[in-house]
Image (cartoon, rainbow, N blue to C red):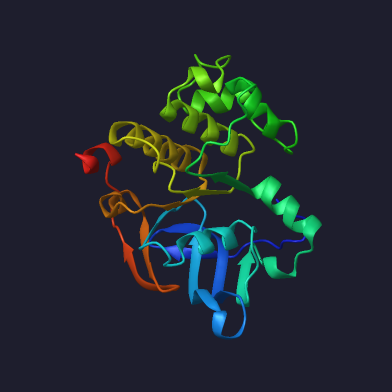
Length: 251
């Protein structure tokens, strides 16, 4: 995906092989200086693999969003290393970071960030027009079950439908990494379940590494692994031997 990256090593997981995407060691991020310093990440170690679904849990201020921003190349660490496919992101110049974000990473946030004057199809096309080997907008919207809403404007869509357009926009570039920061935070329970099912389907069918921030501990059952953060540290990692159904978990 990136010209500066080397071939990722592979790690054994039972009888199957998993492709290592992120190798993170001692990752720390602090803001401010002196007595006003705020430590957002206090040195975390972990590896992330292609096709995994990871849930990040923790109270507000625990470091979840900071960690997500680091993975997405939106922020740089104060200390430590964040290696993606053999390349240390902290050594990338701005051009290489832009290429990484454009080609490898899809972002989904709590706010939909759709352009009101553009249809669903046109909102997704904003990404497909600048991507290397994208899906068509129609293909991406079909994946999120909006094939019949291509020419609707955001104001003509429900909140859940708008979030699904945002997901279609994020995955249309065929990213290796999908980063979701409270993607259901503005939605009711039923609509949120639909959105999470879409993310789960993308993870399963495309093989995209999905990392999801949520405050809802029940939804941790949908993950392969659950990282619990507190005070900028990963205080627990739980492995689910079998992922649960989002809809079954929520009821």
